[in-house]
Length: 297
Image (cartoon, rainbow, N blue to C red; front, side, top):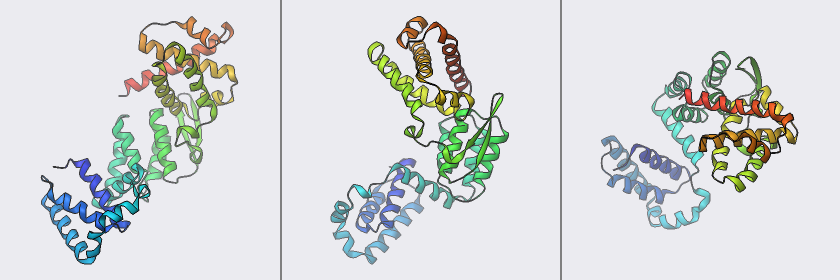
């Protein structure tokens, strides 16, 4: 028996095999699928019909299936992104309203794994009014900043261009879609330098803290992307990076251990009394982000 996601996986594999003319492997996969139970009758009919056509059209391919597989090597292995793209397009072929359904999920449901997944699917669907609808929604609606950033990434993946104006509390952030990072290493170096400082201290004082800090920092940076706070971080000197690293360490340490040892943390990161006001401001920003993320779930 095949679970729905497993069935989707095999359907995508089959499509790729046919597109890359690996007919022998496609026949093997079809024979395997025909032996599985619990699927809709129409699937078996489609698989049997396709298998019959392949056997008649490419009789030599069945004999060379093993060599075809070996020749394909790792270059033919299906990447997760390729699978997601093919799956999204196959869903669109089955249901012309699929993009609108994804848009409704993104725009009307709280921030969750489901809304993030819907955005990923939208990034692989071409055409339509998706860009315009997502952009208008971002600019006219109060959206959680983390969901704002994920939507900006989707717009960039879709090839959208231009400036998007986002409401961030009492300010308006103007963000150029083309410059939105898609991977962690695409952020300016100051972002990773904060984590490097945390890694140095965590390794000595609290090894498990680093992994939680890395997750929190990544999401926090996404949530403040394009804001005045974000730009101040990038323009700041080493002392400001120390302040953010210390505040991040303090925030995660409290969450893990339940006790506040601010003096100890400030000593670790060389945060003097004159820097304390900035340290507390960074700490409040991190805490506010965590609180808003919990409430929105």
